[in-house]
Length: 295
Image (cartoon, rainbow, N blue to C red; front, side, top):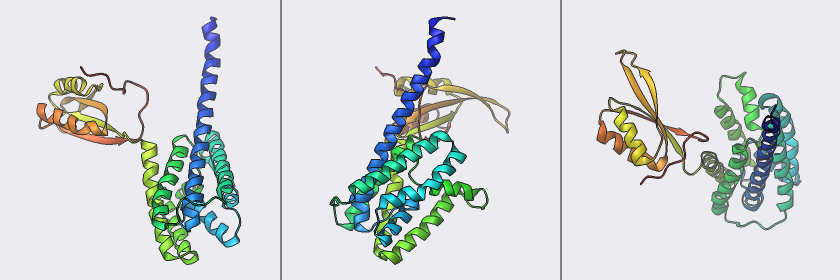
């Protein structure tokens, strides 16, 4: 056995540990960012988040006890549920994230908020909150047990996970209307919406990728034009028409959102009758996605 063969497993283990450590660091950063959104924007202005955090805000307000305490205690059962449903890594990252969120909210509680204007707090609080949650989700953790609970209910109820989460949040925001005010409840819904959009941006990235399928009689020419004019690699797939039985070459490629218009122009110039299907991709890694230089 060579020295290289002996070193390979150790190298893989080391790489895996570094990757996991990176995930832990990013989850902690995301949790701290979320804590800033809560304690320095939303909570001082009586604006809520949804889910378990929203419930924690209500209980914290009613009992005049630290928010971080209830975020930690109420999420403990969901960490164990997450371990059973989604695995050990998810449970560890979620536990670290929730602990960091709880400790940071307690530490920030006595600081002055950045603004006392409800609208500004809603907009910027929602943005900051969404960025923090998005980072945690992107690196494999969670800061709220609502979705884990929804996954369990989904197996026994004829509703999707998204519908169950929405139903839970309707109850939580309705409670906020009675406890705080209906105006603050509406601000809370707005902040929740902004946060959800920011989560999508963080998870998908600002430069959203697109998957492209093209069926044409001019696939060779179109494929070459994509490589020459966009600098993107293409893959030819072999398909068969169900109705005609004809064999067809199908072009598959991945581009960025800003390249979509140029690709459509290329296809239309070569074959105006080509079939073009475009889909969104949350993440691209590996392979030859990196754009080559065009001279």
